[in-house]
View (cartoon, one colour):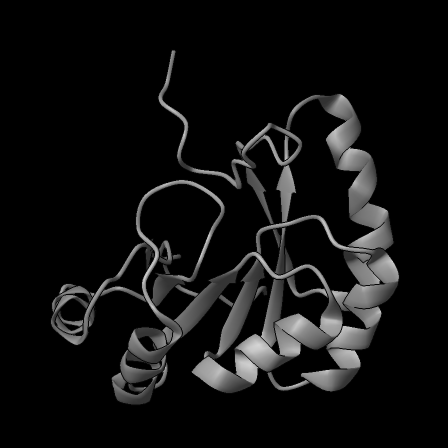
Length: 158
């Protein structure tokens, strides 16, 4: 006889949290994770690293805090993580896959989510290169090679 695991529950991440008050509201509403958008080349929602650290310091487990970083090297991402203390880092730029491995060594305690910008079917070919060093992938809209990089979630629907 197979064991019954019970009903599945969707996990909810609320992105673009801008303040401790917004974080408290999201947690009270049942959020499993909070997205904290750092400096980006374009798009709405970034807050200062100081504000991100303020929010991460007050969020109780098991609620996850996701730092959305546009840094592109393992050392810079690691420094960003250490400055803001999230439980997860969402890497919104395509980085060198070797850098992904270095980041795993520098920050083994932080969950690493690699964004893949889906501009065409070839985007999925990036996944095997990152797979050994990340915990999850997030497929997103975005045009990282646009004149002003768009790193997902900020283009209007046509």
